[in-house]
Image 1 (cartoon, rainbow, N blue to C red):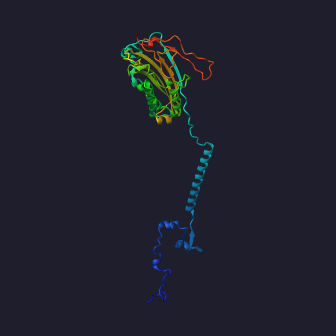
Image 2: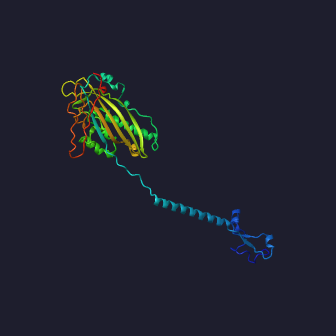
Image 3: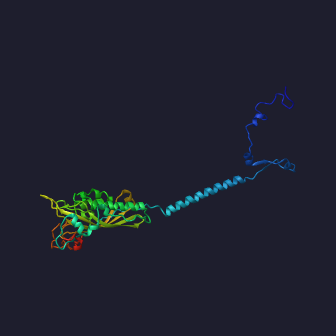
Length: 357
């Protein structure tokens, strides 16, 4: 039986008015605050001609729109500035500078009298090298300090590489009298390998292609080491020449005990000293430091006792115990000869630079 107020046929199915229809609708606080239309209160509706509802100001939406617009404008300005600066000041990668060729100066030092002889121990004790250290210990490292553009570790790497070059090119017995060149070649910049190879294969007195400008070498058919110990003293100086380059200047004196090579019969026990003053200038860029290599820029070699007329481009030519320098003087230089200009240099070996007879 239908209740009072219900339609005769009961509540139609599917029409609004059932309790289940709004059961899933939840009017929480955020929903109410966000509503654009709000109903007046009962007191407000008592007024004359008061509408049932009023529209709320859309301030929150306008504020969000302004923030989005401002963000878009900032992005546009930043992008435009970046494009403008990129056009006015495009990034230019650092230019790759090829390595320079090594410049070589060779000066033989001729003795005024016969070359003193004796045992290696006697000669070292009586000469200026008595207080020199032996071997690689004589190539001492200076205090390591960072520079304006290179760290302490990078400076240390440059010094260690320069020392390795001096050890391999001035102290290694296989290089001195065995003809080995690989230990020295392995430390050079790739751009200098062609010059080095030509210097070894075809030595020339042109200031660029003397083997003895790169390394100390004696002719094994004529000279042998009387003592594997080489006395050494000198300095290493680091200079930053540019933001991308370090230079190291080395200045070392190497003293070798030599004897005649044993061609036939027993070798002579009498030795003599041979002194080589090497001044080298090396350059390192950041790639060189990473690859443990160097660029040899300049090499100056003063060596004696030698004869001024001897060719020391392929091998140094020591005068051994009892020998004297010739009277021919320096090799002849012809200023009218075609081709690269050459200069023949020669010095006199001071008597104070040799052991006491």
